[in-house]
Image (cartoon, rainbow, N blue to C red; front, side, top):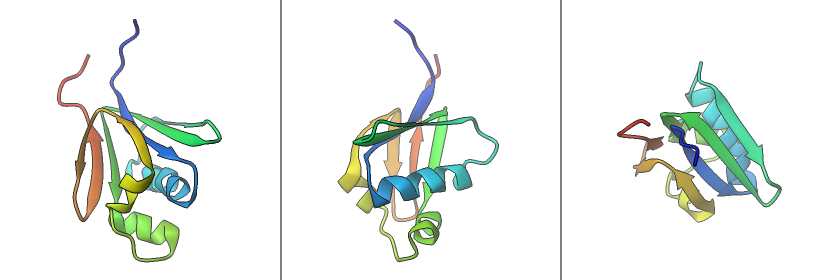
Length: 96
């Protein structure tokens, strides 16, 4: 069994997933980001912590955005999640 410290969302493909991927690159500078496109869904993986900011999502989508909209297309995620009006954060409290 392989263990890792990767966290991040798994989203149904579409407008939100595309914007999330773009926002992840913008909001997590200098981090090694892996995006796996499986046609029906997209998996984003980052070591330890992944931040997605509302203002970045608004910029990517070109419209107002509520962070709760992510939940509509979020089919799964790795790590723990913190979601509020300003950002979504995927993280690990404990590392392997």
